[in-house]
Image (cartoon, rainbow, N blue to C red; front, top):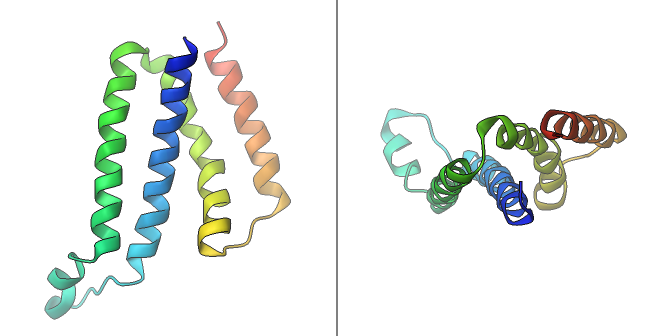
Length: 116
């Protein structure tokens, strides 16, 4: 795997993680009552989240065009670390030591999975 492929994979995982943060932000304005549900789908945060996710999906397709799924897919696990860190800084959610311990284990797992 080239450095460009690696960078693009990580950028894609970051975009997916950012989409999750935007979905969380959009969820605060989501109304489930029949009268307001359609209107809440026009929430700008939800629209931005969907656009980011759509772009991330297109990026993922480009990744898969040049990288085997066996190599690329384990990197998606990095989102389990990126999302809590982003939620800490962007949403004010707490982050604990176990997030970092889990990230370390995930990083080892990704390395073992893609090492050739």
